[in-house]
Length: 35
Image 1 (cartoon, rainbow, N blue to C red):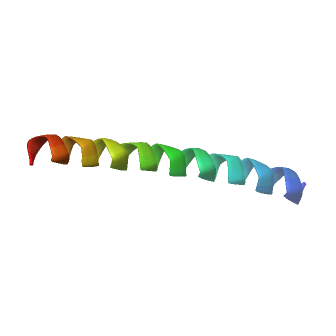
Image 2: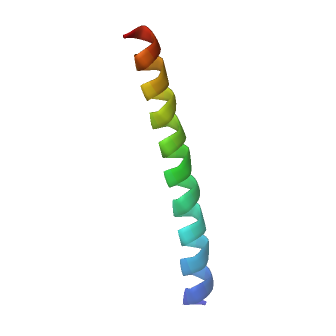
């Protein structure tokens, strides 16, 4: 049970990290375009 929960949590965390990274890249691109 813990393994399944841990695995699901890990996948969720990776998805959140990836989304966060995409937003940061977008911000960098926008700021470079403005600056």
